[in-house]
Image (cartoon, rainbow, N blue to C red):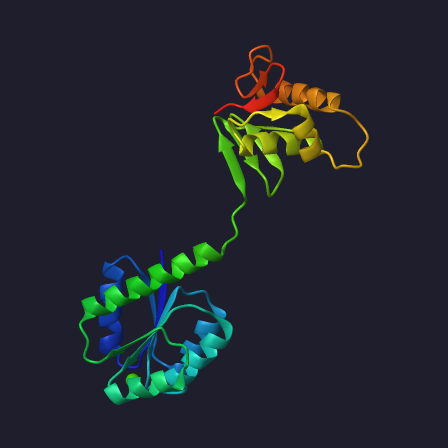
Length: 229
Ligand code: CA
């Protein structure tokens, strides 16, 4: 549940905002004093701030400025005067939105929702996801170098992992043993294409139900191998 902090000294307005936000499923906390509001905004985790401009203690300008030094949480500024909003914009304090009193509570809720959704998308897009390859019951986590076969994790050596991943990432493409050797083993490495055959055999033992009838890595006689989709 998203948590909103309202810093507002007019009790009736704060309560009205709280009621509407709670009806929309938000968890809401209110502070009526600027100093306490600022302290909580900096020290606690909230998903959105609604800041009145004129407050006892520390005003909304200063709270907004200090939050922005620390966090990217969306901020909606509320003011009784249109002129103040122009002033906030001019100061470039980093507020995400502005609303003037009196406002329609449902519009306020709509704006809170829109900013939260945008912020959540932003966070999601910045979270690095592991690079996965998934084909018919095989899941390869390229970032963590882990492999699951029908949900069960299996251990692969470095070259087995590289070979399986390369084939799975290029499904339906027939590779010769020479091509696979060049791709997976570096140029200086001693060995021959028989190494490829040995590794394919080991991989099959781990991924195939029946190694005599491979469902994943198919042998193309006289040519090489291909990962079937
Ligand atoms: Ca006020």
